[in-house]
Image (cartoon, rainbow, N blue to C red; front, top):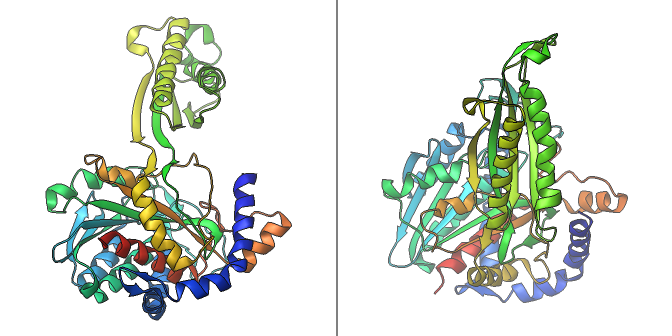
Length: 450
């Protein structure tokens, strides 16, 4: 974490030291023959509209696979611009296709969902909404991961690409994706959209908000985010009265034993030079003090970069579970049951495409604005849009969204700054709206450039 924060500090200082040089150089730069100054002016003029969209989305967040209102806004905006719209893709996903002559097919994705967090900001457009989770429970909800900005950026890009139709040729595919937070949305869309007439892209682009000052970004080739598996392990036993444990097979004790043994997979089985994470995020068992239940549920999250580490994690979990069953003299029909709920691969930016896009981003943002941060153990599902088309390259980058003064003050004081994803104080500074739009526009135009 200190390395990441140090990088942010360095880039914050670099941003100002290089600003004059950047202004001089970018005033002459072009992307696919279009002056950077013209592109920035187009986005700047659209900022009032985009800010209104962003504030509305932020005030009305929707949980995974419940993004009916959000996808409706995307569909309405894109249809008005002349895009061909396909709705209800992967339940609540939406796709807009704009054909503009012969050329490459470029797909750009923005995720739409929020998370179950109660917003703690004092923004006048803060969320006070509640949403129902899968169990039907009402929970406070918030855009604490910037997906409202992602959608806003995409709609800004869409408008400018229509205005610039005489400058590019090909097919632009814009994807409003549901359910990134639970990891199911991209897979759900990929299972449907290509059979519904959505063209397979020649390349895929996407952006995400990041806890860095507006004006900087992070775009590096290679593996950037870890693979992830979410699985449930249910331990079965023989229930009974708490006063006669000898007549039972206690699944809570089995689950507790498993939790401790699982940690040895990371500490004793995996190679210490390659990152692996195993988290038991939830334990569910029993309903009363003096009743031994007949089952206990563990909810696990696994993360890795090497495929062999994923296989090791799953293998050892299975071995530990079976060993516990044997030690408790369970019959085969009461052996633990494992259900894999989510299975995401690593996010690996294509080297050649990343270099190409970085050329355009540097022209737009100026030099010394591309952060260099090690790969993280967080996960994404954007790459799963290409799960059946692994030959298609993609580039996914991070955009700084923090207010300069607040960020600098927090860094100097060593405090938590209010721009970390999933934080109830998460805050996208409004200056990030035109900045992110210009970067996304630059990336898309560069992708179309031959």
